[in-house]
Image 1: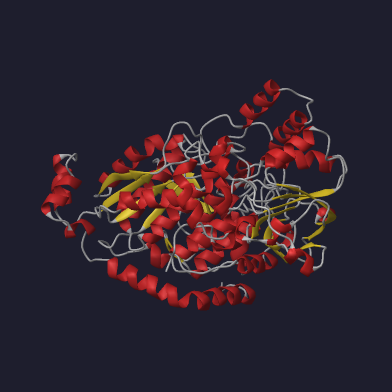
Image 2: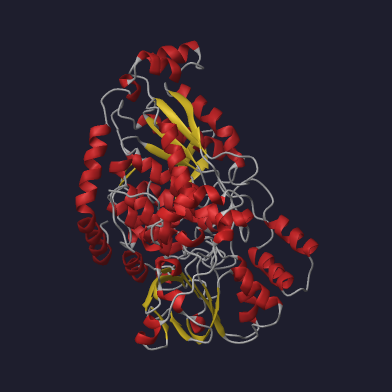
Length: 607
């Protein structure tokens, strides 16, 4: 099937906008490709360094130019649940490579930080920038030019976008992403959220809170709610960078290991030494990017990807905008209810039919481009499957179920939860911003209330504890953008504002910072651009200004005359405390170079 006319029209708009830079990028990819093993260009001294620790048989193979060598980029560490399973992957990949007549080496490792640990802490101010550090660290690992393809071991929030940026920077190499999968289900996410609210209200203590959190985050794998980490996995599959059905298989299972070995063998099969050469820079095109955005809307995915997808696309010479994302949201129905958009977790989503069911529904409705290239071959239709373990221990695939296993979790297009995807761009005299509405009740999508203007989430939390917020208001938290302090997530505010909303107050948030990928039930206009530190109007707001946030019409306004607003000076707070401690002094250059949120908030100047 072909994509619907409205989907194709947006894709063509992106294609035309991107054409000059995309053509330059593809020319560079073509020039970087060779017809022999990449390491054939190395001198004898270079090559000797590159295989010094290999076995004698591997040295013989690598000395020639017909055996493919697979580079492994890993984000393994044993502190973070999502990345701990990667400990065993290199040996599995090396074993699979030998079985396929190739070789694999760990090309390099990248940092992997957890926003769940750094929320509300100084380290969160490094989080967004870690994406670009990961891209650079990957580039260093691949710069040795020993490799004919690469597999990328990464899962969470900034890790996958950083790896994608790097993979596309090495666009002549085939690339396959290998996930670790979600942890098994713990206590329901709504129960965890309830305990958090009780703690914020002082009704339970730290011991009870820690017990609930520990029962939720309890073992290896990604957190089970549908935040940025699991949105990453959805994106990698729907964009064709995973093997079919790989995204949401739990760690430590025979199927998970079989999928990992299969991915390694497939990566070796699509190098330029074979007959199915699939360079990732050519494979990922405007249609792939649009498919990713469609998947984000259909599943109610993370708002963080309104930043990451722009940066990822730029790395391939493709220019997308918030308006493209917003227009696609108007065309794509919401088909998944996974916390915070519902009560289920990603294991329930997978059990209900998962990615195979979702992709088939979207394809049959003309909402995806079917005629794309993937790591599996031509077309997206082969992804409408479920992966199973065969009797011989290999991966077998069956057609995804014709009906959802639970329509409260995963609905067909004919029974969509809402007709739009729930991500919208807001415009107005404060700037423009992103709002996620898929978890916000319709009656709360329009808020008009006086502003409470603060410069940190800590200040709002303190006001809440002091009992100063028992009223309708819109919280304005500014000087939280990329240039101010690295654009941390303000997830701590979710609980506070949720408590006040549950008490009957009409509340909302406006900020030039980010919220968690688990943005929830409180209306939040986030990523306000331009940010306050760059002279954005959000920096001119005063306590008591009447604000209107209208997620239905897409407007964000302060109800004061334009000339009065323009005449107000911007009071720049003392941000020196954000410039040191926990390594923040090392990122001063990043803060200076960071681009706007609607341009990917990147330190890279793609051209």
